[in-house]
Length: 130
Picture 1 (cartoon, rainbow, N blue to C red):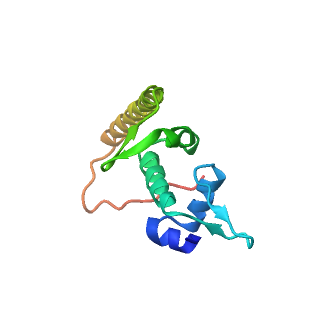
Picture 2 (cartoon, rainbow, N blue to C red; picture 1 turned 90 degrees about the horizontal axis):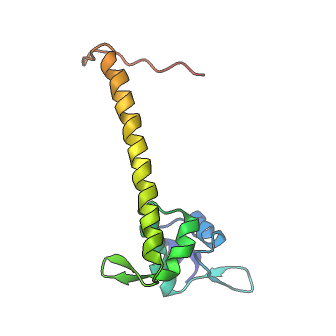
C-alpha cells in the first residue's frame, strides 16, 4: 500500500510515517519512482510504535524495544529476556519525572494560594511579554 492508504489505515500523518522511517522504526520498500510501499505488517508496527510512544518511551528506546515485543491481545508483551529490565528502567525514569512534576505543581499551588482569592468577576490579565 502507498503512504496515503497507510495514513488512512493508521490515522498517522505522512510526516510522522516519514519520521518513523528516519528513526529506523519503519522500513517500507521503495518503488523505482521513490514512492514508499508499506505492507499489512507495517500497520501493526505503527500501532505498536504509537502504544510505546504513549507509554512515554522515546523513539530511540522504541527502536531497541520494537523487535522484542509481540501483541498479546490489546497489550504488548516482551519476548526478549533483557527487555523487562530495560522497561523497568524506563518506568523508573518516568516515575522520577512524575515526582518532579508533582513538586512543580505543589509549588504553583502554594504561589496561587498566597495570592488574592479569585471570584467569577476576577478579570484575568495576561502576563507581560518578556
